[in-house]
Amino acid sequence: MTDWVMTVVDSVSIQPYIFGSNNLKHIVGASQLVYEATHDWVHGCLVDVGKTNVDRRGEFNDQRIEEPTHGLTSELVYAGGGNAVAIFKAIEDAQQFTRRLTEKALMDAPGLQIVVVHQPFAWGDNLAAVRRAAFQTLDRKKRDRRVSSPLLGLGVTADCQFTGLSAVTVQTEGDAQTEDATQAGRTDSWRISAEIRGKRSAFSDAHARLGKSLPSGYDFAADFDDFGDKGESSYIAIIHTDGNGMGKRIETLEAGIRTTDFRAYIQAMRQFSASIQTAAETAMDETIKLLIGNIDAEDKIGGIVTVRDKKKLPFRPIVFGGDDTTFVCDGRLALTLAEAYLRRLTTPTLSDNRPLTARAGVAVVNSHYPFARAYGLAEELAGSVKQRIKKAERDMTAMDWHFAVSGLVLDLDAIRRREYTVAAGNLVMRPVALDGDSDWRTWDVFTHMMDGFRGTDWVGRRNKLKALREALRGGTERVKEFTQATVALPEIDGRPEARNDGWIGRCCVYYDAVEALDFYVPLKGPATGGAT
Image 1: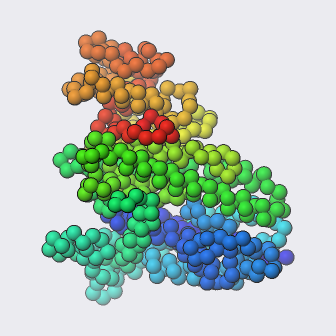
Image 2: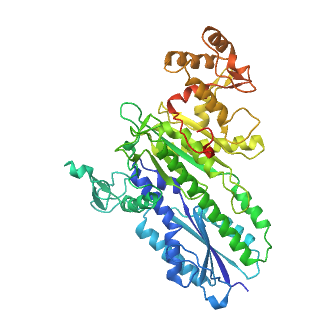
Image 3: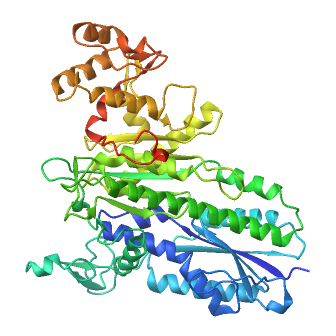
């Protein structure tokens, strides 16, 4: 008899919803609404429908839906990784939950698209198979959903200055933002749509949630203009990280559970989701501590990057709390912070007794570069790492990056063909591995070269470095002429030949390090930070 229902909640078209603006408050507020839709609102709607195993804050109790004496209407299996899974005793209760949740999304987060599926099953069924069937249905529903077009206005309307949709109100500077403009006597204001109003309203909640991880007195940057040093650097970085092979790990976890052990399956999935969330939150907290620990007496990070207003960090998490994380920072801190976060994320062991491995894409762009495109580039870079992992035929933690200093808007493959492919071969050594790897393309080799180019033979000699870049583009013979006339390149363990001609096979060894010199600020921290 089919009495039970597994309900899966997910969101769709998240990237354009979160990253389709160059206003940091809109981005942060949108991310907060996505988080609430699969966490806080799920918890609240479950409580509203009937007795359940969580409270509105998401705190679990020890009651179980299969125990008649507990009288539960529903049980939340887990909420994390961008989706939530719950079990109901009756389809009517699952449908009531869905109505409440979607109404909440429509009212509080216009523009956010929620997808919910219900997968019926019978007691004693294999829950792993039920979950897989539910997610297959979810994927089909995402692909085949009817895409609605917003009503652009009737009669006399005004457009939102951010989205082009019909404006519903006027937002003034200082209202749900900062008070600086109001105090300065400015009267900046914008017409905004319901979608932007919802995102801006969520900003304060997002700021409060993030602020819990900060020592007293410190704050995150609230505007892209808070990043960088005027007259010196105006670059920001978007870092996108993702766990490797998470789907296969879940399948392996499921395979180790007896198919009819209902409770063991729920506990295993809940523990696995919680262990990922704990690892990600701990990694983020430790990365923030590393950043703060490198602020000197002159309010500079690494002696270079200025901290605005003394304690306003040039750093901002946007999507976090799972293996899929996105944060922004000053462009000069991008490589070291991405490496530090990956190290800390992949150190602890998860509930399946294995640590995470992860990949990161780092896009460094001008602060006025289209943010959605910058995020897309970071995703492509993370995808480049995934391709290297496939070619290596082994798992690894690795990262790739790109400095979009020219403002050229092309996809990654086109950029690499146009800018980094010469007659001698490929100019980039990226992606680089952070863990042990027989290949020389590692973070340790990269930072060793960076240290060499920051030494006495090279520091401050920009013309010499510019000449080296041109020599590297010319191939091995040009590099040999350069090194014979000037100085040998930094040595690489086990690869002495590269010091003279700059190449290993058809891959250039030193070009990445020379290009990155203006975007590399070493940070001092605990051993888990590796080369930092």
